[in-house]
Image (cartoon, rainbow, N blue to C red; front, side):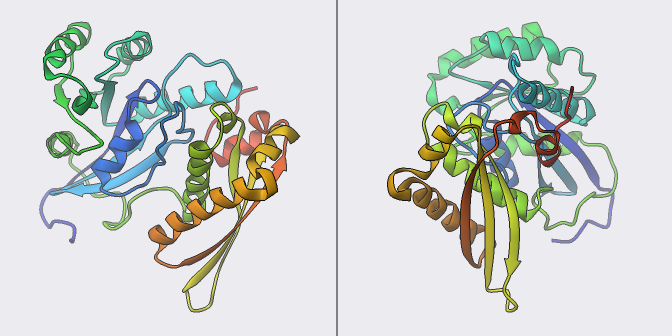
Length: 303
């Protein structure tokens, strides 16, 4: 594909909603590639991630935002602030609701906050494959009674149902202008950052319920072979306490080996090259209050 010779459109589309409503899965579906990690656990997304795709003459930059919730810690506050900032800066906002949960307290709080965002807004009811269809019309009516949406779409990000129509509608609403990224670029994340996110996803999927929120991953070294067929990746997993380090390592190192193997396989699929992944676990008690960690995640540090 080459950029059309006629008028083009380009713009940012923020994906906003409460935690665990399927925002990252929707982003990946609309982009057509995995650019944001997905786990069943809430608040998986910490950083603002842009997934880029082209539909017709429009280039869409979908912004995956952290779930909006009542923050308790500095990291929580920074994540929620990043989500609202992305919505305020976008050309279009997709407000995503989990069809099973409907307009619960968390979704209602996001909806109330959305009223202050002076941007076109589209209601996206996700996970429609998991509920009886007769439950959807009352939910549509309730949401639109509380807020005037430009359009409403019923989708399943998991199956793709309704996503093509949503993509076409969003593309048509963007302002005219030149494309902002190369046509083959899928994300604004660097390869090093994406690799760290992949490993964090595997940690989320394999560890205990609360432990992943005390963990962050950084890619410390990236060295490609001269022929480009292999890459060595060194990553550090930071935890808050020695007891957490023991859990990540597992008995005889079996846990960390399984995590590394899962991350390595996925990185090889994404990169199309052989990957030698080395994981190290370190205790850094104050990393959730370290300004450098916030900068690495693209979040604002507030004292």
